[in-house]
Image (cartoon, rainbow, N blue to C red; front, top):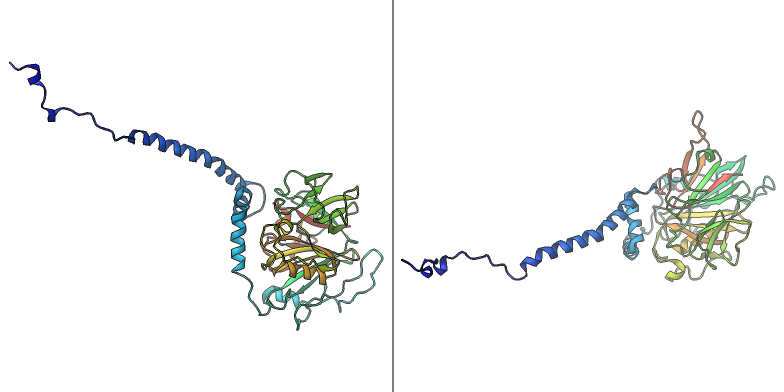
Length: 401
């Protein structure tokens, strides 16, 4: 009879417990923990991005994505990409205008464009022609023609010209606005400057029969280096020394330096700041091409040629708006100056935001709210429905007096 020890299975035949390599049993919980952390971090980000894509407004998917990056610690990256792209895609040198913008230069002028006496004391004299920048101007270049009237008086006149003598295929536009026949209103967008305001996009149907024109405002508030005031309250504080477009109680639009040309008082009903003046005392400011980000902002550099827009005021109170592709801050300032601006400021830049529209009365049989919308410059990119729908950015609108 075998002993108990003899009945035991041979050493090599014994059932062995599986061995687990050291550390492997703890690897799976660690991986799950890491995944949970990633999800926890990403869910708010994904939610924020999704909210940006579905927020009110008429911006495209690309614009919404870019603006979301700017607002979420990636402004530096967007600025670097834009500067790199525009630096390597500058307008060609030479050439002649083609397409619709060429037709706008050649479209004729209002008589000789010479200054004339006003038809009544209630309107301003016609502006003098703008001196072209090229040695041999095209027919009609720099000449004014009326593009909008109110009660038979010119409300807006436009002039078209090449903005410099090098990039001669480009065309810029300047609009001259008579504040005697139109009044200005500053409109908030559905995103900028933030919050809810009495005058906010879109322009109401009931006001559209009196609507004459609308045009873009300045940078997003986080980039404007200034403030916003309307309806007795501030979206951001107004900054002394900054370029300011303000509207008084009579509906007149002005441009100047806050703290020098205007201060807060009961006659100021709206004020919008954007960087520093680019025109002062009738001339471009000396450092308009400097890279001082504290003064000019940290967006596309002032020397880079891109779509730009600007606003100025003449000695007799007329408002001038200038815009075009392939402009530097200096060439924009020169356009405003040659159009008679004694003070001027840059407004928004890049093709997505630069736009000026005029509106004509409803066609026979159409609703009173329906309008025919025309771009000041034919190659402006934004849709003509921009300010008649939920514009994300703030803007200026001009109405009949």
